[in-house]
Image (cartoon, rainbow, N blue to C red; front, side, top):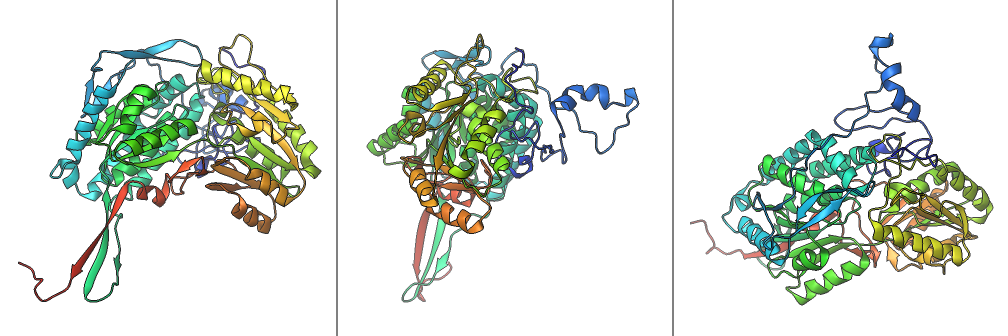
Length: 570
C-alpha cells in the first residue's frame, strides 16, 4: 500500500506525550518546524524530513564519501518481520492457558483487513482462574506480600528494560494490531510505557503515611496499604500504553492484577505477559485475560473477589462497570472515559502555533483518542485565517501504510468505528456545517478516512456534541472570553481543554474557569507520567499517573495507640 497524495509534509508521532517529543519533526507531532525527535536510551535522536529519511542511506554514508559526525542522524527504526505470533493464549499464574470452553477469536490488521492470528477467548471461568491466582499471590505470607518495596521497584525497572529491548517488536505488533503508524508506536507508545514504568518504580519505597497529634495521651499514625486484587479493562486505541498505565501504579503499591485487553488489540498485552514472567514477577501477580466486554469484561467488573477495577473506554460502558461494581461487592472504581474537548483560540495567540498544536490533537491516532481536539472555538478577529490555515495544513497529511516511515495517518480500527465516523461526518454536512477538506473515505482503501475539517459549526450540531473518535476537526466562532468559557463548559464531558493566548492573566483565568481535569496552555496533549490525568463530569472518576494515581491503588489505615506504662516491649 503506497502513501496517497493526501499527505503531510511530515509524518506525525502523536501529541507531546513526553517532553523530548515536543518538537519532533517527522517522528513527532505534526509540527511543520524542523526539530529533533528524541528517545531516552539514545540521547539526541532522529533529525528528519521525509526526503532525509528516505535518502539517508545514499547521502549520509561513508561509502559515498560523506563522513559520519554528530550532525548525521541515526537510521530510522524499522518494523520487525514477524512470521508467527508467539503469544496467543491466556496468561495466568505465569503460565499460558487455553480457554476453559476451548473458544478462540481472530484479531485483524486494520490496514489490510487480513487476519493476524487467533487468540484464546477468556470467559467467566477463565476470569475465575485468574482471580484465584491473583488472590493466592496477594495472600499473607506469599512471596509478593513479603517482598521488599525496593525489590518491587527493581522488578518494574527490569520490565522497563525488557520493553526497551523489545521496542521494535512491540511497536510492530502495536502497528499491526491497531493500524497506527509504526513510528508513532515506537516513539510515543513505547516511550510513554517505559517512562511510566520507571516513574512508578521510583515510588515503591516512598509510599508512606503520616503521624498526627491527637487529644490526650495517644499516638496516631496512618499506613497506606495495597487494596488487593485489582481488575483492569483497557481500550483498543492505545493498548500497550494503557496496559502500563494500569499495572504500573497497581504493582508499585503492592497489589496483584487481572487485566482484560480489548478484543480488537490483544497482541502487545500478551507479549508483555511473557516479559513480566522474564522480569521475575512472582506467579499470579499479573494475569491477562483476552476476551470480549460482555463476557470477560463483565466478569471482571462484577467479580466478588476483585477489590478494585480500573477502566478506560466509553462513557456508556463506564456506567455499566460502575453499576456492576455496586451490585457486586462495592469494589472501588476508577474510570477514564470519553471527552469532547474544547480548544479556545484568542485573537492575540500565535495563530500558526495554535493551528499546528490543535491539529496534533485532532488527528493523532486517526482521531481515536479521548483527548481529541474536536471542539475548536476561535475568536472572530482571526477566525477566517485560522480556518484557512487549518484546511491547508490538513491537505498535507500523509495517509497510507502504517509501516511506511512517511505515513502519519493510518486506518480506523474496524468497520463499526469506520461507519460511525462517516455517519457523524454526514450529519455535519446535513446540519449545515461547511466542509473545508476531507469528509469521506479513501477509495479502495478499506478503513481509511480522510482527515476532515468543518467550519461554521454550531453548538447544537451532533459533531459539536458527540464524541466522534475519528479524524474530524470542528471549528466554531466566538466573540468574548465569557462566551467561550460558557460554551466550552456546556458539554456533559470534562476531560481536557486547551487555551491559546499570549496573555498570562487570560490563560490562568480561563484555565481556572473551564470544567475539566486537564488544561493545556499554548500546547496540546502534553501528557507526562508525573502529572495526574482524569476527568470531570461524565469523563470519569479518579486520576491516573503521577502521585495522585497511587491513591487509587491504596487503602489508608489509621492506627491509634494509647500510651501507658503498661505498654512495653516484650
